[in-house]
Length: 187
Image 1 (cartoon, rainbow, N blue to C red):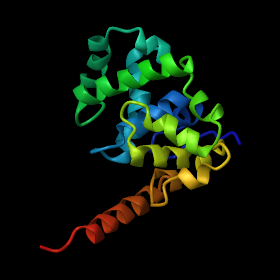
Image 2 (image 1 turned 90 degrees about the horizontal axis):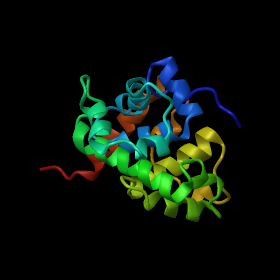
Image 3 (image 1 turned 135 degrees about the horizontal axis):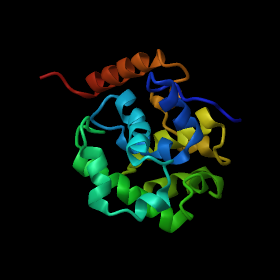
């Protein structure tokens, strides 16, 4: 299944980039913490504009780390915590370059199965259990490219992987708020 857009940012060009560039998609997932989903997933598009070239893990990994982080810190910042998230994005590009020949799609395309895909994601900088499970769901549900057994590893809670129209982001945000309320005991 080839998709033309992931409608998560409210910006057509940024949404197309997420569908066309596995690295943009992974960077958006990496940045999806402590900022709005739309902001996190739009950041790779803004980063590409600032770099003046297509997003490419080996090219980024070859950059001076401080120069790369400078693109995150530049106003408007690409994240609420631009310095630390810029370093984490750089580390992700280094890992993809070293372990997957600079091709992020190899993480799922060459995985033996869903469990291997999940394990590969968890080994990446910035991808803990929740991010890894959500990303498995994105690749399986939205891209239609999950390896056999991806469903058992995918997030089983409301996440960006469930968003097929920009309007559904508010539904996911509300589901996350309700889940947080339910998990927090009253004072």
